[in-house]
Image: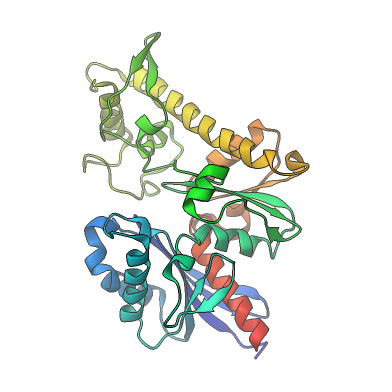
Length: 350
């Protein structure tokens, strides 16, 4: 069995994206991967979840798949009245989409468990961060994982090959600084700052959903149209020009009353303020670690450039996952990780 190639599908089912990786695994390592990142606004499309999952799975290829490995964050979506309801709904959707294929889950204790009746749904809510950190801990000994996604940022310490996070639940992680509810695409700029400089004066901002941080980074050239993977706030184009029109409304202006140079300066200020929030959280996490400033930071996620920037500001060395796993894998790293953790579990039992 040790030399047999095993195939797994790893899933991270989020509130705005489904990320899935098909992994061919042999002798303790990845032989090949296929990756899919599918935009999905759970609160709009949750009734179609099983159909969408099936389509994504078929696109990756279901031939020879030994098991599904699942993490999720979509249980927090307001499509569901509780996290418990959300976890159960998602697991039912997986079962309906792939009948006959075993489903494995990562629990909050870091164990890979086969889905069965009687499991406590809350043990499996929001463990995607743990999947990434735990898989990396099989490859690296001491580091900080800083994963900047479209919506949130995870900052996870690993020491001597063990995840040593201070928080496990979302509330605990928000308190510890290990979860920061700010991301590279979907975050509303008014969660980053309440005022911005315009022509030398500080101007209060509109508490509306006119724009998002994806517009900011599109204007600044840090993300491409293809990487802007969530819907735009106004449903219009994912171009720098359209993004500038949206961002101008952040101060109740438009592209006629605020010129492109002023909008660029506004975007650059918002970049700075978001980076400040991330750096502050990184400092909080480092403060709990002996010799924290000697730890390298592994930068992951769609906004890995933000993780690298924050780390360099603190004089920390950076390991970029894109160089080791490729850009798409680094963006979908939690789904890759839970699949690999399941493969490791199979290796141990064979």
